[in-house]
Image (cartoon, rainbow, N blue to C red; front, side, top):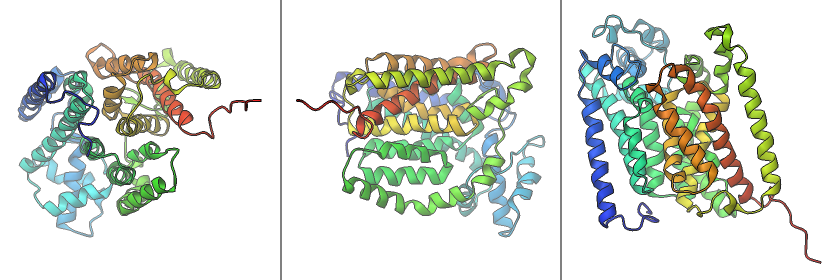
Length: 408
């Protein structure tokens, strides 16, 4: 257990101040998100910079409805049952329940509990909100990043809470355990469990790649094998819930969203070419840098501990993987908060650019036309993130390092 390792003075005066700020921040968070009733739900979240729905927890209503169907008729066609939305529309006649786009493990757990009341559903989405908030606080304390607490109040996190999307619980399942222990086998097990919940955490397996001996990879294999049943189930269902996930260009990020630019009007039809050119130029710049840099400390002046390296790569790899392969709603950017906590303590140019970029994106919905700007602002964020992943792995493995001439 290494929760406080590398955090000197946590129990001193400065550490006590951080604890007090953390408790104060979580209390304000609870007041903002656990207070609104159905009557003022939309107005409360619009004041927080969110385009809110008229009914709480819109993204998770398909889990509630599917669990109800499963409980009533175990052989029910969940897709048809969710489309009927009979349970949800008892409370909200105008509610639109999205098709089931989560691994079925969520439905089965909800059905086992067997409580289909509206009060329990509100408890469920409140638990989702509290899980992500508590994990952010834990990250802030672990890496001594008071600035992390500001993310508790940003519009991007408020959107996740308002929609009740279980990215919040997935975030907690992934990061809270590896903050406590970073052994490779345990990390692989945790990543596997998170993958079984939402699939995209599979990208964070990049974090266990090391220039290490067979013992390291044996531990990784054992940890992954223990969580394999849950992972395999989620991976098998990919066609169903990927096909049922709808997204646009606004309030979203990812290369697949470029195909939707044409729906925004003729005036910006050249945007996909401009953004693609930006990525190509960034790749060329990275090649030049890596061909001329010898020292790992050129990019990471302060050495990363094992825990920091693990959390940083998990965070960056999830963002880069989802950016390249998926269309994502912007609340998934919360998975970059751990990277911010670590990089905010580094004193090199790309970490500062990354942190400034992320802060801008997370608070951007408060600006006019933010729905459009959010997507565009994620392109430099991807460049910075991919650059750091490649540099870390490039310097980690001798196979990719430049070979120095042997002394004569």
